Length: 481
View 1 (tube, helix red, strand yellow):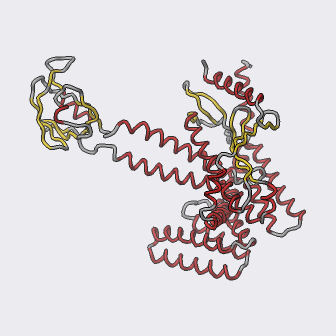
View 2: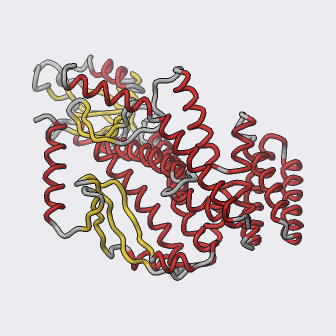
View 3: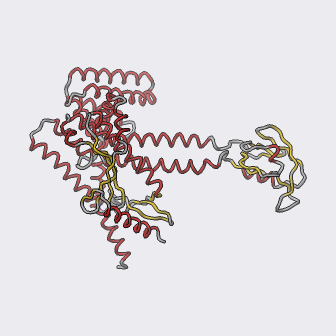
């Protein structure tokens, strides 16, 4: 059966079951499946060190919104955490500067930035906090970002500015006809070479379903748990946890705080809850990168540098009496076996009854060759060798590495998209808290907020234009038009 037809049948069956159940349904085919799983664990984690969680959340505000985030933290009187964050970034700059220009230059920069951060903490001036924090991020970012405009936008307004700038740039390319690729694309189930998975229309990306499932679960669990932890730190009750599905297709997960309680909290407490989802995904992405580096380094230890590793022994043959699995054969009768080709060279000369001398990790060993089962005149040791010491680890390691790649892909992309300054993204809620803290008139707040939201919506629509072309071509092919 065609995998696509099977997927469609399973989707329809699952959707029918949900329709007949008592699961909450919204907008026709949007199901909200609620539970209480995980609430106790979230509550326990939130109590470990509430002050630490509050600092991490404030740090994520600064990291996410750059100088604008620093301005907000200064306005809502979280200057202490802002100063700590500035010192962390100063320390990062110290390491980068020391690497390129020497330790004295690095120490001087660290002392200078730390002193300025302390002086600004005493001054309690939000505009100065904004300027210094932006300069600090610009100086630090100059080591990894060469484009001045992008560096300027990130330093002043944070990661949302980077994403909006990228969407606007791609919109211009689409309108000018210089690009046929969509700037945004939904994840859809598909198949490739008989294998079921997911893909993104317009892009040559295929993710096997098991890797997609693992990556999505990791992404959603950490994102929603982070929201829940900060909600409980602020003593906001969690009503439920659950899954959001479009028909039988899960499209999200949620931790549901009590909205009335959350709205009654201070702006800073709400901001901390909103900011932690994307920050958690960024942390998971970085952790996955470090794991890939660690696993890759470990995989090199599986390669036998000299000789070949014994990975199997045939029962009843002479090698079984003198060798063990994991032993290394360096040479046979003084003929090197540093590669599989050299090993085959040495063994191609074997004759039945011949005595051979092996230089191994156990020392010099001798054995009398037995007749081969295929040809009685040919000698055989009865040993299976490889350049990889433990071949049974190769498949699990490959699966792990590939899963980590997709975990990085989902976490980094969702972290960035979720920071877009429009509702329903967390970035929209965060941006509203920032604008409200500026003490502008209600009319000015609405103009700023809805102006940004309208611009982002228009840019999204333009970036989706190639998707309409892809859809038209797809249905034309199906209908033989």
